[in-house]
Image: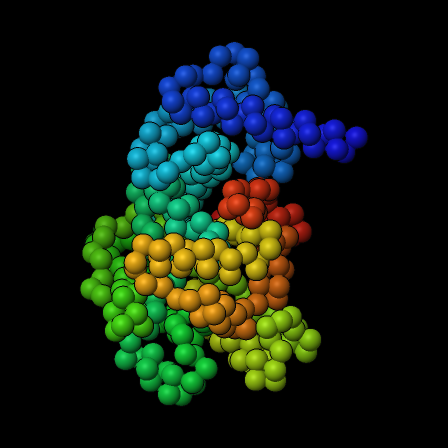
Length: 366
């Protein structure tokens, strides 16, 4: 029975992808195709709950979504190589998420600060860019910020490495200017009508070690999309490091993990400025290593340099030693105290399950 149900679900998914692909090419759904879209929308109970779709409002929800689909699909396709799978993602995720963000902004009555947490290859940058396109169609301005934009300067990080040689790479907690981030988000949350100096980071400076460049002068926006590989991640109990997962194997590794965990506390005031947190998580965290190797191989094939596979493995495992996904990300997957929307990323980087964690009360809007 389960096998038959799974087969039926796969059949429905393929049919919906075909409908959306044809729609993206200009063929609007007929009555039968529209009925298929409605039935498929309600069949995925977790996604329906995530976007508050019910049998009573599904018609209105999809009508509003369809207007945005027609208005944005061509623009999105100009910037991204949208295959049929990504057209489906536009329909099932990006558009309803943008609609919810716009509603959240209106409900709150001030700029909405949206955190986006996701590791290497999970699609944080793509999500930010496509949400910006859809929100603009809805009449909302956005500012995209990365945790990378908050790195300490090159000179400051050189001094930091002298004090702690383990911080050989930028990225882990301790290598960012948290106060700069707090000041920035406070300015963006309560705009005074003046332009805002948004910090930006040049990763190519100093032979790839990176440094801050001139800030970008921007007008305050309706919605701020703040993304990063540990945005919103919280410290864990010290007992977690008594028998930690690989590659935290030596006493030195455990000491580094404990110290990084402690430094994470400095970021909590920054996370408090978030109004909501989206988690993009792969079905297996080790896929980030595979995806990074693939990206670097493509760069080398184009003659753009890039790290060897051995260097990539050392690089990725360094960050697993700092904030291991099993210790810091897995607990968030089902915890609604900190995560408002969870999006599973499959091995082929397509979107899997979409849901809102149910284990605690949702945060209130102040």
